[in-house]
Length: 187
Image 1 (cartoon, rainbow, N blue to C red):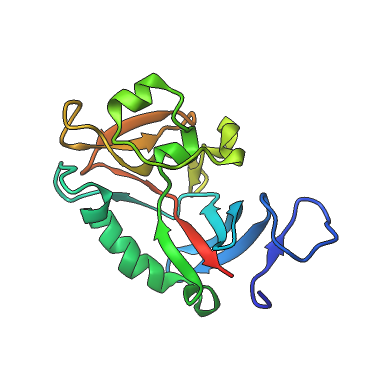
Image 2 (cartoon, rainbow, N blue to C red):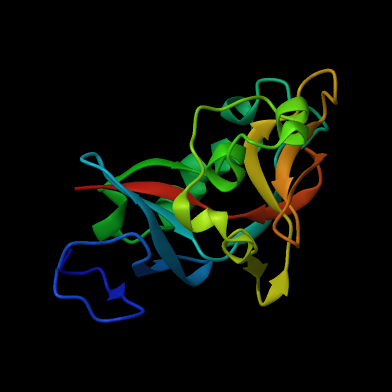
């Protein structure tokens, strides 16, 4: 971690990362960003960017066939975005992706359960505060993609999003929305 700058809102006595700590990340061609530690396990630390790094469609066509795993956005994240990370991070990154409905909102809301394909993720503690679900792109409020497709009976063209106000909604796959990367930094 010697080449990774950790930003803390308050001083701590430990050198270990804690939930709420931030790191600065320079993405080649996209800019400089901060990412916040949201979960710490034996596997590593889950970071989510504090802002959207770009606005892109989930798919070129309005379809959620194959879900996020088969999406054009995932292909871009796995190739272009991963290559934009600095070398000292790139070799330690696992599971580069975008957040899920469960991570941001949990599974308590009946509307979410009726509209989105399920995931097994628990709501991240910092995401219980709506302000942490809201993000900007170039200093402007933006909607952002989530990994969950809508259920087929809702739409075969939509994916889950987080809107300007930090609430779950959905949008058609070919529209552009913010991309807020999340990744596991392996210890």
